Length: 277
Image 1 (cartoon, helix red, strand yellow):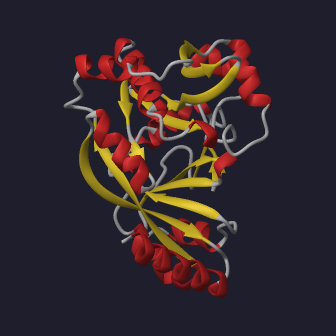
Image 2 (image 1 turned 180 degrees about the vertical axis):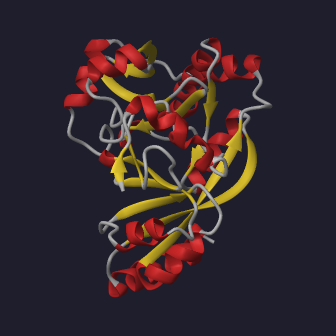
């Protein structure tokens, strides 16, 4: 597999026609984030779109091609896989079945969003909180913070300056503190992916709903589809509250590199399901 230059990634688009869940593939294919590799630059049959900071890989093309098997056999430990074409899940399971964890993700469409309703949600803030569109100062503050609250924001941008130039976000401030934030996790010519976090001490006040509504409205004003892609039931609930329409689930595969670790994690997930169910 060889690197594909940003300007040549468009040649790979046909290998990912089955990947319709979010805009990560589009953003990488457009060359605005990540990197791409393929078996051949001129006539690619197998390709992988990568977001290295996330150890995330979208595989596409002919799963029966020798390059597909070779790539998966050399897959780094703790890699996440999204599947962009038929046949890949079966191939992954045949190679790493006892070292893979399948996690469902929940897809939504924005087709039924109601602008008036979103404006109403955006205005529902407790006393003491104010919405602000992210500028360079706020982006730098968020980028400099080492915390679970901040770590998922701007990971697909080169710097806070790059984020302000190409992406956008909104903060809810209490005093000078960023209490809740929604940013473009990824962006392409078609739309955005959304990342939202609220500090623990400010949760259960409706802040995530309000800050999400601000981001969604701004995205629509820019002619960009604000896609929602959920990893858990909490995110599903927020998407539903905002007016998104469920589109079913799709798998994310996580390679642990260890049969024992896979068994432990699977057991933990089952216990979590039983407790939450």
